[in-house]
Image (cartoon, rainbow, N blue to C red; front, side, top):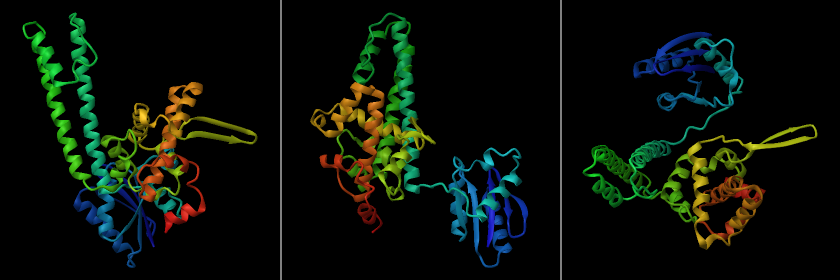
Length: 356
């Protein structure tokens, strides 16, 4: 068995082979990767090759190329593997050798590489998010100009196209009319681009059962459903709702030592957009009158009075992760009775149903 540690960078990578103790540098282009694959197969005639590589920007491409050649690849979770990142001897050769040695002992914490479908959905949502931020920034500039020159300005003035045109008509003959006009054109252009991105996402997720299930939840619109679907990827990798809540990062730190037990703030581990989506889901549910009698929302109101809105929102978001895990795991739409599944998912019978 040939265990190979790879220290991967943008333009090149260093590989260490345990079978012969040799180092070699390669380019990250097709020629360099092909040369690395050939070298791996030449050093081990049985074809039993395992490559360990850290999770970086081009790991997905590198992994795909190797797996197509029949080479097993293990991607390292760098957050849980500090031997390389905190080493006092930080060289490419040393890092590659360390990865290979831990790989040989089967001591590498592996990272999950999401599907190509989820990766594309994440990319599109990220672009949309950047465009929305640009819209907000530009609107704030217009608000600032209107305030500075003494014009009446309301929060919702620029929300609609009609409102923006009304502002332009008012400022048409003023000295700041041209500046505001250019900013308004930027806002309109950015809105069009957001619509294009959303249209592309609609095509991509067409027929996605998970998104359809998520949208049966009160307060869960298409954007929130897209975010949860993209960053959750395959729900089957979470053995219980508690594991899923921990992945989202809405569980508290726990520090237990001897007789001392301390609970801190939430870990905030996992994708930030996914955590934001669950918070927005709570905010959406707060505005729906029909669900205010739900057990979930009654508990939210009770926590709000005693702990404050912030903690109440996070606690409710954690409860919603349990419900979402149940919905996606068992392919069931939202039902008010699902509020009762919280704390019940870890039963042996339910785990057996999941593995069946």
